[in-house]
Image (cartoon, rainbow, N blue to C red):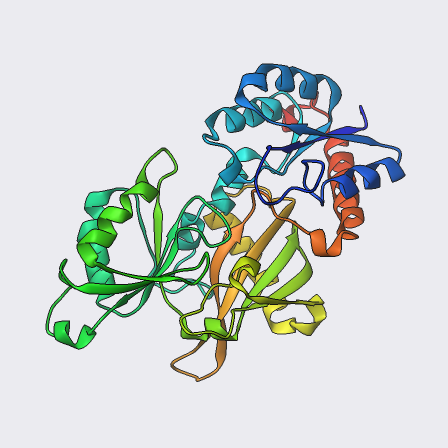
Length: 357
């Protein structure tokens, strides 16, 4: 073993400290040093892709990807490099395809009809489908539209029809209907016609990763969103994020005024058990990839109409660049997990036929 790990980051963005790198990456480097390993942070740019690839292949046993999707104009070159590194023996944490499978908004749609995602969840990849399907979806009540890219609530809209009683005898909401729109980024509201909003959403459909997720709005979001922080298959922390107590607020981001409370997993036994029991199903539906190294699952409370009991609904999975600045001591657990994975990987000999790729 080379006993070296590369941590990939991208320049810019609001997730950086005074020296330009993520505040929770340096603790990972230090934790590796405490165990007799070395680690370095490399800022990825397309123009340096070849040099970065050769350096990582030569020096590292593994990489840890900590690139926020919003910090790269186009992720194509980055993912190509990661795939080449994995193909040539560098352990990917996570594998780029696992990053896409778990981190894309359509991961929620792939889990619909299970105990954690309702049936009426849809994804749109082109304007024609959006224009045809969303007016029918909107007839069922208030919806939430989420773009595939972005962070901190940008491009996540609560969509509510004004005067819905006017359309109770129609199969879908007409294009000239007035909508009240609230963006999760800062809880600001706008009014547009349905047609104007659909045209506005074209920007979210552009590009190779363009997509929109359409979900029912859950009113109990005002009680808080519950973020489950995962280290592969272990629940390591829970963040209860309660939206600001102001009119129209539904966003659970700090920027929008939400209040965060940090809990231990044992304080949420039912949710922890639900997540743990759902992992095999999630892995199967999301492509049978290894679980990401650090990832989160965000849940909201709903009420089961049959029993009247609480139930948890999955709203989003994050796997590309999950932060843990509030509990930096997790760097120790992260590094222990990485080294255990590398030890297990090294124990498998490629010379035996059963393990040949």
